[in-house]
Amino acid sequence: MQYPRRLPRFEYLEPKSLTEACKLLLQNDGKARVVAGGTDLIPKMKRRDVNPRALISLHGIPGLETISHSQVDGLRLGPLTTLGAVESSTIVTERFNVLYQAVQSMASSQVRGLGTVAGNLCNAAPSADTAPALMVLGTRLKLISPQRERTVAAESFFAGPSATVLEPGEILAEIQIPEVPRRSAGVYIKHTLRRAMDLAIVGVAVAITLQDDTCHNVRIALGAVAPTPIRVPGAEAILKGKGRSGDLFRRAAKEAATACQPIDDVRGSADYRREMVEVLTRRALEQAWDRCPGSTEGKR
Ligand SMILES: Cc1cc2nc3c(=O)[nH]c(=O)nc-3n(C[C@H](O)[C@H](O)[C@H](O)COP(=O)(O)OP(=O)(O)OC[C@H]3O[C@@H](n4cnc5c(N)ncnc54)[C@H](O)[C@@H]3O)c2cc1C
Image 1: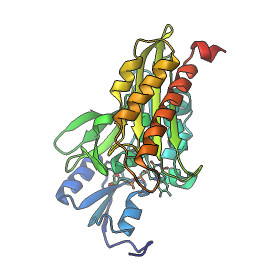
Image 2: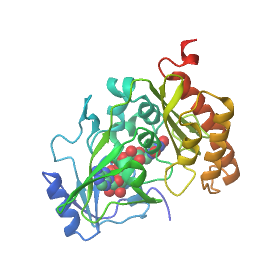
Image 3: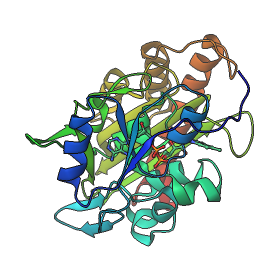
C-alpha cells in the first residue's frame, strides 16, 4: 500500500459541548473518533490503520485549550492544550519541569503547535513521551461520559499498545497534575537514534522529593519498553527513605531493567533497550536528586 494516500471519506462533526461530543461518540457506536490536533489520527487514517465514519472535533467547544495553575489544584490542562502551549508555559518550565523536558523532546515545533497532551495520552503509543513524565508527577485524568465522571491515575489509563481504559462515549476532559512539593525535581531522558523528530527507543522519567538528606518520595516511569508506559514500584521502593547512594541508584536501575518488557523492533533490540533502561535510570536518578533544592550535590 502506498503512502501518503488521500484521506478516506468521513463525516466531520463539531459539537458545542463535551457532553454533546460524548453523546455523538456513543451514537456512532464505536465508529467515530475524537480529533484534537489530528497529528496521530490523520496519518493513521491515511494509512488505513483506522477508518472512522465520523470525526468529532473538539475545536467548536470554547475553553478547552487552558493551562491553569493554583497551589490548591496544581496544574490543569484542557483536552485541547497543545504541546507547544505547555512548552512555552512559564509555570510548567518552573514548577513541572519534567513535563517541559518531555514535551520539548517531541516532534517538531510545527507538530507541537497542533498536537495535544491529551491526544498523546489517548493515542496510547508505548513510546508516548508525555506519559512517563505525567506518571512521575502523580497525574490524574478526568474522564467524562454522558452517564458519569471519573478520574484515573495516569499509570492506570493504558490498556495496551493503542488501547486505553476509555469506555464507549468517554472523553479525556482534563489532565490534573498535583502541586509539586518544594524540595523536588524531575528528569526525563529520551534515548533516540536522531537528535530530533524521532520516537523514543527508551524514555525514562524520574521525580524525587527530599526530606532532610533522604528520599521522601520517588517515582520512576519508563516509555517504549513495555506494551504501555509503566511505573516501576520495585525500583522506587529501593530508594524510599534512604540517603544518596550510588550503590542504591545502581540497584534501583537494575530493578527497573528487570521489570520492563521490551521488544525487538526497527529502533532497537530488546536486550539493547533493557541495557539502556539500566544506564538511563541511574543517570536520571542522579540528576534528579542533585537538582532537588537543598541537595548536598545541588549546593556545590
Ligand atoms: C512528525 C511527527 C512526529 C512525532 N513525534 C512524536 C514524538 O517525538 N513523541 C511522541 O510521543 N509523539 C510524537 N508524535 C505523535 C503525535 O504528534 C502526538 O502523540 C500528539 O501529542 C498527538 O496529539 P493530537 O492532538 O494530534 O492527537 P490526535 O491525532 O487528534 O488524537 C490521537 C488519538 O487520541 C484520541 N483523542 C484525542 N483527544 C482525545 C480526548 N480528549 N479524549 C478521548 N480521545 C481523544 C483520538 O481519537 C485519536 O485516537 C509525532 C507525530 C508526528 C506526525
